[in-house]
Length: 184
Image (cartoon, rainbow, N blue to C red; front, side):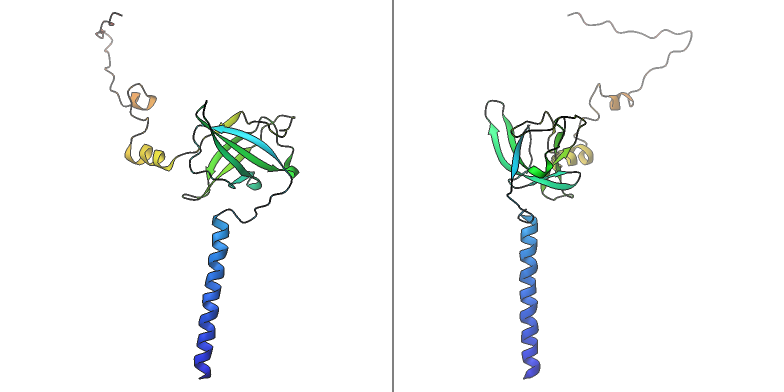
């Protein structure tokens, strides 16, 4: 009887630890971990494509989380996405010529905004806007471009396709025929 009761206790502990592990993973994947709403200032970025960027996505500088995405709106007149970034006040020395790019964590992970610092002596102030930005790269585009060959490579007039075109060679005593240019 005592042996059967120890199996029940062990099974119960295993189930409780499993639920604890699931709760931990859920907070890590939904950006609830390290979510802090303290004193911050807002920077704005306009993108033509934000991919799967979500509210509360991390904003990183040199791989360190410095803020979160606080709002995403569509600018109807420009047809661009306006992304507002809430940056922690501790990081108030970000140069005003920095750029904001959207990257993906891992191959299929969540997207985040990465700030690449510039070299200006002036810093961003509350409400400023990034001038330099890089849109999100779409996985479908990359697969189509490199695996299927639906990218820009191979189009006539490309540098890549010019290498593959066969050019006739002229012998020293022979002239090449030139086609007349079409009249406009």
